[in-house]
Length: 107
Image (spheres, rainbow, N blue to C red):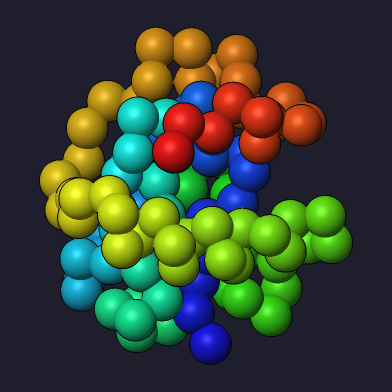
């Protein structure tokens, strides 16, 4: 089992989770973070740190969000690893909780 970043991270990109990850399994794109399932050690410390509540264990990914399991695995291979906390995107608070953000995912 691994952890998965889901839709609510899109256009928010809080990196509090990155700061606590003991194995550097996060990768970042322009407006979204993903977890590399091959690096994640299932420690779950990132879950509580996510202000957008966008991280779930693979088995608990909500219905309608299951495609993010594949998205995390695929984009982790393409995007650079990040291991330092940075500022969230400028309008993160505005986008937190907005439904249907997958159309804004910048791959």
